[in-house]
Image (cartoon, rainbow, N blue to C red; front, side, top):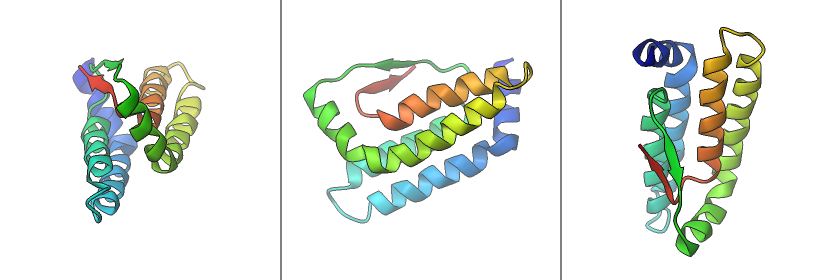
Length: 118
């Protein structure tokens, strides 16, 4: 089920979302200060391609909180996209697993620092 879910996810928009994350990563990496933010965006791009079968544990401390505050302008846009996709997917029973993954990605796109993908 995990492999099938990932294939369907990629075909129905995962590729485009990952591409958008990659573009955000390139924009952040233009400056030296933005490189840590760009690395998180590239991590999100890779995770967006295959979200099924992965769990996320949140942790970190004060540095993660500060970094997440700087991240919010880019993450808010992507989180809203994931939220809308999640609501639309949860309308049908067939789309419910995809909606759950979209909600998981929405939370992670708001707070990527201090989060560990397992």
